[in-house]
Length: 99
Image 1 (tube, rainbow, N blue to C red):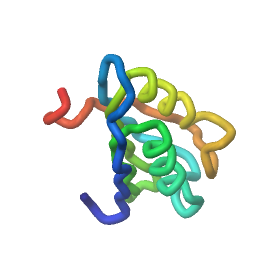
Image 2 (image 1 turned 30 degrees about the horizontal axis):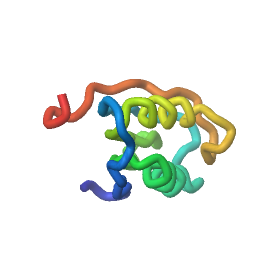
Image 3 (image 1 turned 120 degrees about the horizontal axis):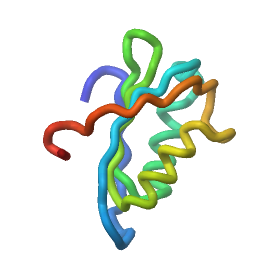
Image 4 (image 1 turned 90 degrees about the horizontal axis):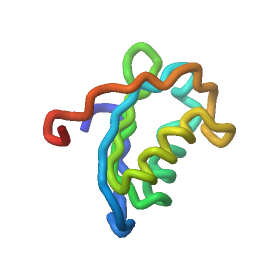
């Protein structure tokens, strides 16, 4: 994992279809607890993933697990509980090992 990355442990105990996703979160998302919040949300939802600060001030997130939990967390990135200010969430292709 790169500098500034955090990884959620995930619990893998949610039934149903599984999926993965990646996104670049833009806005005021560094230095405001965004990665910490994202990691706690991964754990709470039984997902695995990472959050990495990028040089341009954005954060790249990856997440994998139950499809409904992945969709819910992607939607929460725009929500009022996300720290800082999220201007945009740009989908990225999942890492090659998860395609």
